[in-house]
Image 1 (tube, one colour):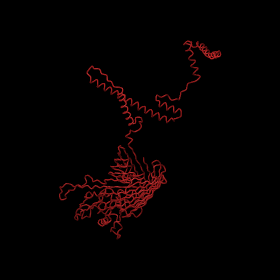
Image 2: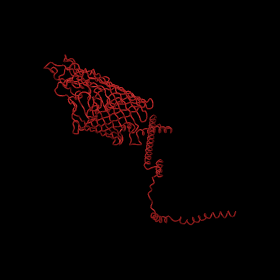
Image 3: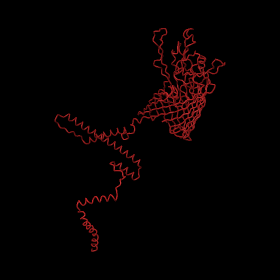
Image 4: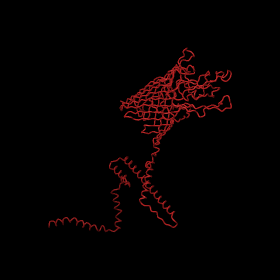
Length: 632
């Protein structure tokens, strides 16, 4: 027991020492306020001399817990500074939207309460006091509904990201491309310049007087040309929801040719004159069933699949409407069908002449011509087959009916000047390149000798129409060998046969119209007697391409080579390729070329095309094209 007490006294010793120290310190604590004031400056100066305070680099504490947490993660090395800034901006944006929504909700709820109070007060007799009571649950419901409305509006209009476009603007896509080209056209010796009749120049302008001793318009067949040309296109497509979309595209071009948007630099009036632009596309699309069904109307891209430009120029736009359908019946095999109707020519509303409808009654009213509209009806069926990831095959068969395009010989008509018209003038083509077979349309009445056209010896102004009808069948195929991907070997082939062509009819027309009908063989007597008709109704094209399928990136590349054979009346010359042989049909020859990527969506192209005529007058031309292309 005594040992325990002694130990307890020993442990109480520190407590006694502490009490003694506290008693000794009591006088210091009891100093007067004046003494403390006198000693304070000296102590402060001494502390200043010993150590000056430093500015802390620690971020100030934020009232937003998310921001504080992000800053803490940066200090611990979990996040990088730029990642933290992005998260802080997002937190601040969300906080701003939430505060704005709550503020608007409270304001609208208060306004609603005030309006209800005013309405109730107005309904009470004068002197009545009325206090409107809105239950708290109703207030909360109002605030929540208004907050949801404001939040939805904030999300739709991107309040949290003022630099972005609203939702409707994000459904509009702009695209375009530009191309600068050098083109050299080189004509060898032996071309027949006199036989290079330019029927398009005649039919799109004043009629040609076949009784004249001067030559009619011809296209160049003897003089080499060097041209620098530019093409620019800018388009817009808008997603209108529910499967609808609409688009517009404008493009350059020297004229309204359907097969060229090239503008020759220095062409036209020259002297740095401004160039025009044209409406190149304008359409409305509707698609459904996961894009398995598409309906298009307006001025649209070619809806028919065509791997080459044997029949259709690759950039040709179609006026009208089309339906495209496809469906994968089993993995890797997808049949497709296409159909459409396209107006080629619509009769001018005021087409006619100012002559009396009854020539025997000069007081009879002027006559108007009946409509002679021209249409293209087309259908195509085929399939896509992918045998494996490396190999694919595509095949299609199409039938086209060019309705009402054949020229019609006129009723007897009296012509005294180039401004007079006959009743079948509207059957002439509105646009043509070269190659098809033409004949004179007008049956001009011969006036008595010494009057009018002097017995048909003068003033024989003629337009020219197509001799044949055109209903071609086109067979197309493409084999893609992608075993060496990204390099591919692609084999393209196409064959066309005009089912409406009649050689016997063409020979009979040749006998009737003589030298006024083109595509004739050599004269049998070596003189002025025209030869037999030697045009045709078939054509084919084969091509092999090696390299990248698309040129998008730096050093992407491909090369190609092929051969083309297209007889005079296999198809309408107006819509065929405008580069090979400088456009049209009745051409055969080879072509080679290649592409190389110079950057993202920038590439160079080189092409060499050598063409010769198949029938009619001798004609040959070599064309070199060097392009710099860009798209966006």
